Structure formats: C-alpha cells, structure tokens
Length: 419
Image (cartoon, rainbow, N blue to C red; front, side, top):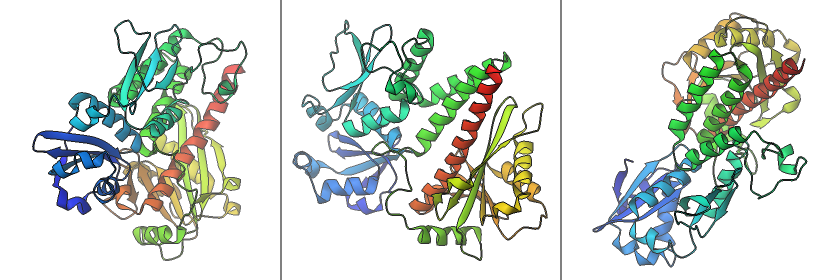
C-alpha cells in the first residue's frame, strides 16, 4: 500500500475523502486509523485529542494517507494493515477488548457473527477475521453484504422460512450446501480484502456458465458482481447509503450542475436509463425520475426490449430512448442520464437525433472511475471533483435505474422459467 506523506503542520491540506491514515515517529509506525473524511479525522486527533491520543501525539513527525473509494474499503484495509504492521499503539490496545473480529464457525452450515475475544488456537471451532477497530461500521458492513451473500447467525434454523428468509438475508431451512459454502468463502474473501481477485473469479465463472447456456445461474452471478461493485463504489460503513435523507440543498447542487452542462434554465427534473440482460435473454430497460434531487416513483417506467438475438447494449439503449421520447404526454426532463461512457452517450444522442423536443442535456456516467461524459466536451468530469450532494444525487439516480431494471429483469426470468 503506497501512502502519501505530509508534515503534521500541513494537516489542512489533507483530502476530505475516505481512506487510511498513519502516524509515523522516529521509531516508525505509531498508529493506523481509518476515516470517512481524512482531513476532519486527522485534525480531530490534534484539536480534540482523546486520553489515548495523549500517549503518542507528541511523537508524530509525519502523517501518511491512502485514499479509498468508500468507507467500507477503508474499514477492510485498516484491518489488514494493523494485522500486517502491528503499530505500537494499535497493538497496545489489542488486549483491551477494544477490537472486533468476524467469526466464521467450522460447522457444516457455518454461522457468522462478531466477537471481541477470538479463540485463536489451531483446534478452534471457528476462523476469525480481523482485527477491526470499530464495531458499528463493521456491523453495518456485514448488513450491507448480507443481501449479496446470505448467511446464518443462529445454530439452528426453524423448519419453515424465518423473517430473514423473506428478506433474502438467510439461506433458509433447506439450503444447497455447496452453494452456501461458496457464498461463505466469497464473504470471507471480501472481509480479508481480496475483492479484486474475487470479482475476477466471479466474472470468469459467469462467462463459463453463459457459454454452457446456464443463463439463470449466470444471471445470479452477474447480479452479485454488480451489487458488489455498487457497494464498494458508493457504500459508507458508518451509515447505509441513503444520500437524499436529512437536509439537502438542491439549489446549490442544481446551480453547479447547470454550469457544468451549460444549461440556460433551472434544472428540476432528471431521468436515468439502464438496460438489464444476460446473453440477450429477457432484456429489460428502466427509466427513473428524480425531481429536485429526490425520487419521483410515480413517474418510473419499465420497458421490455424487443430486439432479439445477440446482446447489443448500444442498440437496446437506442430502442429504449426512442420509445421513451415518443411519449410526449410524460413530459421531458432537463437532464437525461445514461449508464456508461462515451459510446453509450453517442448511442443516446443518435437515438434522440433531431426530434422536436424541449431543450435538454444528455450525459453519461461511467462506473469505472465515476466519470460524467457530456455532449460537446472532450474530457469527462469526475464526481469526486463535484460538490458531495450533487455527486450523491448522480450516483443515486444511476444506481436506482440499475436496481429498477434488474428487478423487472428478474421478474421476467422467473415467469420464463416457470411457464
């Protein structure tokens, strides 16, 4: 892990993004911590030191930081680095019942829970992942990952579906043991910081299933991959990703967006579109609508894509948009947001062509680096360079379009399988 180092006097120049920070003294690493806002957290050590901080803050010479895409990445990375480097003051508190571990039992159907005191002997009845410094974000991380990799927390399960089963958080009374074991291994890999290798493994497995025409299983894997990518791109461990609750100043976010896309009028309505398909089977499209930065679900629309044959996302998006703009009675937005990069933006603009519509702007939001591509501009804008409320709105509307498309796609697949 490469850290960027600063003298402690330059704490005000630290970024406000999530990440890991380290304090170094003459003797080496003193302490490793994580933060959802690096600048604010590190400043707090100096401005409002705790009783523990007083033990080492006067020894700090330099501060190292490493930014992460999300709070969850910071949480998992902090655990790995503490375990690897054993900084003096992290180790000092390790026996203070302050650290947390995720226990995975060695039963036929493993249970997963959080504990303070791991039983680390070779003949232990569980394996332990950690240490983790904070219990609250660790619990929230497990809650966020549980819908993707459902697991047991209790030793026995009733013979009927439990409340967690209905929420798709539990494997149920009669699980596929091999599939459950795979899910547990994948969850362990995530908690141990092996996200990249796991995603590559899942993508390879999905491709093999698709080539063997096992489309239902391939689709389930595809959904897991996309859910994981969304979690690690946007999720915050200290609180569930719900960016639009609480106080939200749409006016300032809208003013920034209007300047960015060079739109002369106020922006109140935004629409986002997404395509969901697996090998072209039961392809669906979605349209979600946000008004003044908040979901307006009464205006959501879903589309069953008619193009047949090999999957072609560009053609499918072109069909979706052509059908959408034929409905003048729905009204039009000021901003249309497409999931994708330059190619998807070009496809969308081709679909709109020279149609007689009110003035609007079309933008495309690429997943890889969260880049916003705009018509007539060569370079994309990074969401990380935007005001945080606006970045959250754009991520929220993009992810909401994806969720809505997948939900409809799953429904059509279930009908196709049972019919």
